[in-house]
Length: 235
Image 1 (spheres, helix red, strand yellow):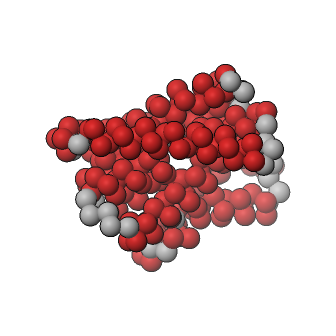
Image 2 (tube, rainbow, N blue to C red):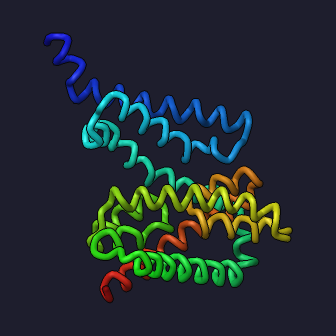
Image 3 (cartoon, rainbow, N blue to C red):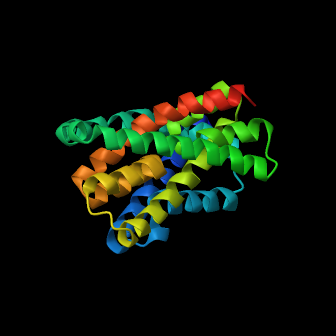
């Protein structure tokens, strides 16, 4: 095998791009832990750095995706792992399930209705509108759902990341501005509004906040799947 063939082989490409992506994430994560600025959030800054590298090297998106697609598969186990702190805080959840349920229903309705209304306001229709509907659930569920209802999974992933980043940033400010004294209220707000990104932010605030956010992220995801499917059928 000559040198050109070696560097362009799928295995080498997959290894190189995967190492680059993971490496950038780890570096950004250390930077965020050190300074904690909102624009240094790994979910926000890492994709921008990756895009910069891909554009600088003139690499087609499909080539990059084919090399790093296995990372998306890991989102499923990562989401399931949130069950551990949920189990540890089951007593808290058992005591406040009526309030959690009310917040979950309100958040689900708000996410779907605002997505539909926003698309209608901007004249977005077809597969792009359907890609927008699952924006408020975590990425592995959202991408599969987008395919099922006729949307575009790649576009849905973009909408999910934007929702998570903005929700996490705004949620952090709202925690300091609003009189949210209980761990329940802070975790519920972040979990409902910003799914996995919000849950990660909630874990920074405390164990109880993270457990509540993780629970609502999962339950809101299930309700969004149900609700968005109905909206898609009525389109």
